[in-house]
Image (cartoon, rainbow, N blue to C red):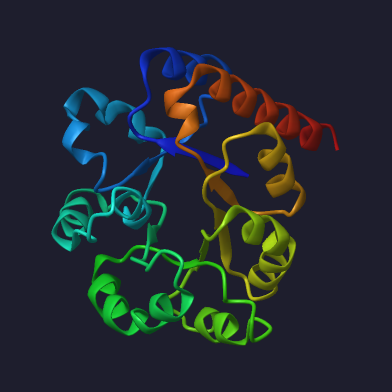
Length: 219
């Protein structure tokens, strides 16, 4: 399981990552690029993905900035593990309908594209979601949504994705407990900004993923 954190780690967090879990990868987002200067470019050589930033704009009660999103893609799409397709936070129906707009715009970048799933995608027994995953332009899902919904649907979402050879990534994973839950559900990757901001969160997450990886090596 791959772990990502925001590409603006503070010094203490980065030092712990370098020492304990140097396989950590990073998330680039329109929300962080103002502060992402050349002095930080070396860390993303380890690997990175591109978030669309919709959740950050949502928290700040700001409209989605498509120009900033395109700027990140223009500069960083080559080499990105994947790109999260812009979504409407908390609104699965609108997120779904907007795919018709975003897919033609993004497929030219040549990146793996993840659709952000959230509360409501299970109401038709995941029928619409499976239709989305049948699209060859979609590489998998980014699990957003509320915490309660995310955790209660995690196992099923992972099973559905892997049944059709698609990727599952889970957002807002900032604790040892959630790392273990995602690992148990066999998800492919997770991210959390806490590992770039709080040393204790960094310690817990890094130590937990190293422990789980070591256990898998033993078997």
